[in-house]
Each structure stands twice: as C-alpha cells, then as structure tokens.
Length: 362
Image: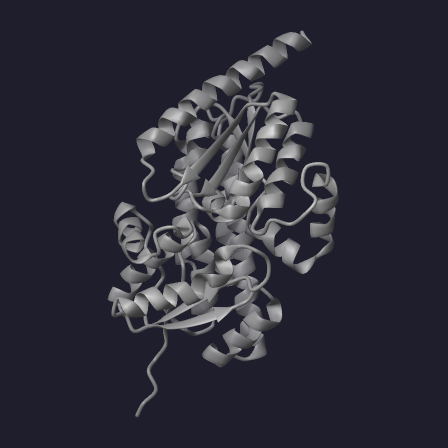
C-alpha cells in the first residue's frame, strides 16, 4: 500500500504565519497554511475545545478545521515540555478532541529545542542538511522582516501626515513577503519596502505619549486575536512598544542567562517561576516604568494561569508608579465593541497623564 502523502498545516499566528509557510514550502513539503482567523474560526474551535482551556488552543483548533477540510492531514505543533504553562498539553489535547470529532489527522509534536526540531523536520521532509539550512535561513529573514516593519508601523502610525498610509504599506509588505519564494527576490523587495517607509511624511516635531504592551506572546503578536490594539492606539496618536516577540522568545530559549537576568530584576516582586511569559510581563513593565512611559497595556488569554498569577503584581507596580494600566483578558466571549470602549477610556487616561507630566516639567 502506498504511503499517504503528508499535507502539512500548522497553527496560525498573526503575521508570523508567512514565515512558517515559507519554512515548510522551502523544505519541499506540501503545505496548506491556515486562513486568516475570524469569528467563525474561533466559534468552531471553541465548540470542540475543553471549555476552561486557554483561548489560543481554541483558536488553533478552529484554524485546523478549515485546513483539514481543504485536505491537510498532518499538523505541526510546537509545544513546551518544561515549565508550568498548559502549552505542553496543547498537542495531546488537540489531537484527542479532533479524533473524537471524527477528524483523522496526524500530529507531529516537538519541544522548543533546536535538536528536536531539526530531527523531526529531517524525518518528515527527508531534506539534506544544506536544504534545511537554507530553509531555516530564509525563515529567519522573513521573521526579522516581519518584526522590523511591525516596529516601523508602531513608530509611523501616530506621526504620519496622511492617515492610513502606514497601514496600507504594511498590507503591501505582508502580501508581497508571502508571495516571494526566492531569497534574492526577497532581498530586493525588502529594500523597496524599507525605502517606502522612509518616504512616509511625518510630523517630525510631534512629541507623543508612549504605551508599552506586556503579556502572553500569542495574544500580543496576533493582531486579529487582540482586535488590532496596536493599530487602534497608533491611530489615536500613541506610540506603541512591544518587546515580546518571537525573536525575544527564541533568544531566551538559546541563551538561558536571559532568564536568570529577568528573575534577578523582578525578585522584589516575585521570587519563583510562574510559567509562560508571566515573569517577562513584570520585567517588561518595570522597564517601561523606568523609561518613563505613559501607560501599560496587559494582554492575556482567559484562563492563562501565568498571566492571571502576575496580574496583581502588575497592579501593584501600577499603584506604586501611578502609571496608567489596563489589563484585557481575551476569549471567544469578548466582543470588539467592549474592547474598543475600554481602549477609548484608557487612551483618555494616558493622554491626561502625559499632559500633566509635561506641565509639571515646564
């Protein structure tokens, strides 16, 4: 009997989906990338998922259902075997609920260490070391590009003279990056995009409030999941900063001393680990307070125990520093209208805080 051809899919994760699609296609695998997440995606995933489980798991299942209907039969799922985050159960739970619902798919589950990833990729793709190296290199080029233009958008949005120009260019960049399959073409495309960003007309003398984003990495980095809070704050004239991204996370995995430094910095507030990115949220908030930011926005999935555990600590830092603080818990029950109302109130508080701070310095 002929062995079934692997048709790969994977969890959607905001703009990073572009880079992961490139990785698998460059390895010569047949890929059906997840479609853009929408309300129906989330609703379908929530129907199958355990009710009290993390929001990202529910969204992942919804993403899988759409690709399975198109022919995907194998799901790549990165997990985390250590620590106290429920991500380490994601692959097993998702496999179970999909099979119980009648979907016959294979899961390729692996830990977040380079050796495990390399061995699993080599096993299913049968690619040479050189091919894997080139695919990984291209993946990182797109990953770095995605993060770089997201940071540029954070800077240009509140300063642009022509409203909407930054977001139009951002869409052009992501669409183009997704289509390009050759490194040389991508290098030229990247230069063109960066040049277009440099041509955006801005109000150079504009001094604006700054808000730092902290919290769980999935909800922070996927604009659909967080209702595009970065764009909305930028359009309100606020510059957003987000230290937590995939590169930040990978550096922590590769360089363990980074974790030691974080624990040392937050020791007055927390003396133990809490899993996930809970400690990072404290560390980043303390950094934003030190840099004299004008507000902190905390994003977390509902039922995320690490973030729920550290939220009282973030509240304490808020009370000590008087810096405006808003924590938004996201799940399938949350409506965009409610998020917008809370964001509008937060923006008013941030701008008043910033105005009063400036007046005190005059």
